[in-house]
Each structure stands twice: as structure tokens, then as C-alpha cells.
Image (cartoon, rainbow, N blue to C red; front, side):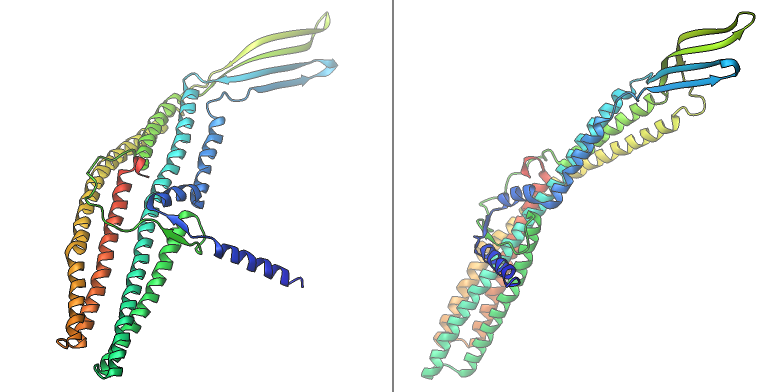
Length: 407
């Protein structure tokens, strides 16, 4: 009895999960859901909290130092000293440390933003791959249904003696092949669904309802310049951080000076009066001299790092401009190719299959010609799906290249 209860609970939970309605998705809703539910992105957001934690201790004075000293001799002679020493920077080092830690927080936020940007592009592509896979299954299923209807009509013709049994066998073989292809395409659909689920941060068993089709627009979007791309913003902020690091390294060439207060009490023998107590109070200074370690090597290192970041930033700006232009050109090319299938090739192939079946019914064609026409139609329909999928994948790439509000 104890073993049956957990099994019943698992069965009930499985039933409830299976009874849930599929999640309705569009490309934009998929991106929005992914940015909220992706597990890897949730982990990356802790980078900002880590940087904020480090920033709390940046740009502050070091803790003061307590100094004590006790010395003793014979006849209760001795000395006791207590003091406090505080170190202060001679330059604006603390200001640069605070500025650098603030930049680190913003850099961590942009690193998360870059991951969000990459995830948005990947999610759009995964969505279009899934829609194309589902459409391929639907097209293949429709072709299998048409083949089944054609086989049924042939079977009726064989019974009446108007059709050949060999033709019927050919038709049944073609129908079986199409049904097998449907099952194979369902496997590709499951893989595409699993990739989309991974982007959304859901389990591979999640079910989706597609609320957007791969219907071509009337025209391609107009070319426009890139928006605020996370990777470019990150490169620019890293350059600013590098410049601040140079200023910090220059300000750190002089070490902190120490200023302290101390109180000292002393007992000593002073002949002929004997033991005499004495109390002293004073100020102490510590000034390190930059003779052997003057920080010039650190400054040179930071300046080289800044120059490297500047070169990388300029290179990335150039790449972004070229990328946006190239992606739009590819988008236009994919659109023309996909539109050609939909406007002429696919309609001609469907008309050809209708005429071939009608000619076969009149006895003007053999069944092999009908099968060839049907196979050609299947190839063209799948090529049409691939062409439209290529357009939408190119569209996702172009949107990613633009960045900004196109996430």
C-alpha cells in the first residue's frame, strides 16, 4: 500500500501536466519569455550583485592602526606608548577607485545584457526552426492523405476492372513512403521543440501552439543603422574603464602617507632626585619615498591595455556597420528566393499534379508520370518551406545585428 500511493501521485501529476494546454507562442512572445525564464540568464544576473558587493568597499580609507609599545628596566624604570595612525592618499586615488568600481557594476550589467541579446537571437531562430519543422510535418501529412485518397480511388478502379493491380501496388508503396516520411519529420519537430524549450528555460516535454506562421511579408523592412548593441556598449564601457585604470595607476605611484597621534609615559632615574615620571604627547608622520618602486611599470601596462581596448572598440564599430549592411542584403536575397517559390514555382507544380491526375484518369498518362509529378510537388513544397525559413532566419540575424530595442 505504501508503494502504491507515490505511484498514484506521480500518475496524477503526469496526467495534470499532459492536460495542460499548449503554450501559445509568437517570435516576440518567445523572446520575452526567454528573457524572463532562462536559467542560465538568471545565473548571469548574479554577476551584477557580485560587482555591487565589491563596490561597497571600494574608494574608502584604510582602517586606522593602533600602535602600542611597552619597555621596562630595573627599579621600575620604563616607557609606555600608545597611538593611532591613519593613512591618507596624496592623490585622488580613492576617487578613481570609486569610479572604477562603479564602472565594474555597469560592465557586469552590460555583460548580462550581452547574454540577453545573444539569447534573443537564438530564441528567434529556434522559434522559426520549430515553426518550419511543424509546417513540414503538416505538408507531409497532407501529401500522405492525398496519396491515401488516390490509392483508394485506384482500389475502386481495380475492383471494377478499369485499373491495374500493379498501379495499385505502386500507389500503396508511395503512400507508405509518405507516411514514413511524416514520422521522420515528427522527429525533427521534436528536436526543434526541445531546442526552443531550452531557450525558454522549460522542460523538453513542453508543448507549444504556434500563433505565427512563416508567411512572407509584402516587402522587406527598410535598411536602418544599428541601435544600442550590448556588445558595442560593453566594449565602449571597457575602454572607459581602461582609461580610469590608467588614471588610477598614475595616482597610485605615491603610496599613502600616515598621520598619527601618540601619548607616551616614561619613568627614569635622574640623580640625585631619583625616579622621575614624564608624559609626552605628539604627532607622527610617515611618508614613503617612491625611489625603488615608483609604479612606472604598472602605468605602462595599463596604458597598453587601454590602447588595446580602444583598438578593439574601433574594430567592433566597423564590424557592426558592415554586419548590419550585410545582413540586410542577405535578407533581401532570401526574400526574393522565397517569394519566387510562392508566386510561381509552387502554384505551377500544384497545377501540374492536377493536370497529370486528370490525364491519368482519361488514360492519357501512365501512373509513373503521376508519381513523378507528385514527388516533384513534394520536393517543391519542402523547398518552399526551406526558402521561407531561410528568410526568417536571416530576419532574426538582421534583428540581432541591429540590437537596441529589437531584442
